[in-house]
Length: 300
Image (cartoon, rainbow, N blue to C red; front, side, top):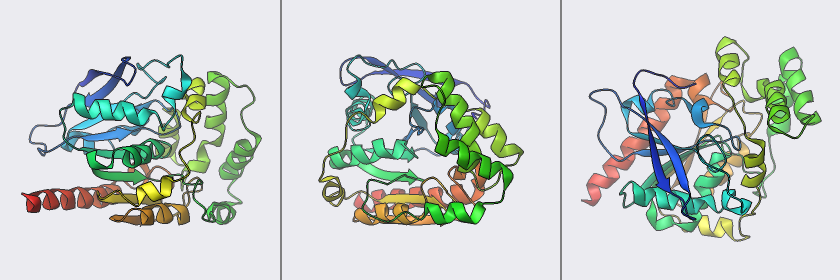
């Protein structure tokens, strides 16, 4: 859910095929920290970025750029659906970097948005200033998942058990309405608790089914892990200790692929740490951002 403490401006930039793509830019509060913007990539896949809100106040304290990915919000879905894949949308993010006048870009991705962030890192490592991967699904790694164990620990909670059953059953109808209804039924699976705050956040979700399918239309190359091993920029991976979607084991494994990568686990947290544990989330992310600033100062 997005805060409305200040207006949000609508930016437009040319995508890799010349299409007009959009991004939101919340207006920071007076006295906010100066510095390069953070480009935040929504997950879902193809979830409207409003669910990110201001990422526990990051959008009030720093300049935040939130793209509407292909087929979501105000950005159209291309006829060539492969352009909307997470591998090819890295080309759009590179165009956005140029549009913003940045020599290097700082990316923050959540969930499926981390696939796009990782794709950008693999394809444009020299243009990456830093990378924050929030609860990244990484089933593409040859690492055993710990999500079955995390799910088993939660069994017996009625809302959680119903969500697991809904997730396993899948959507009843393959269109926007059916896909969104399915996601709502399965929503408790994404949180460590299912209270009023979590229910309100889940109610804000809006998926595009067509964009979701297009997002996975191109597979990454087989040498993706080797490419990530050549990314010099600092990388922070944030895991929720009770994240029954991404788990913890694969998040940590993904961080280890990067030479300057590290993982932090937030306790009592599921898939949405800025909602569930906002203070801890800000402490972890702000510490990473401060380290980037110090590294930049030392280089000059």
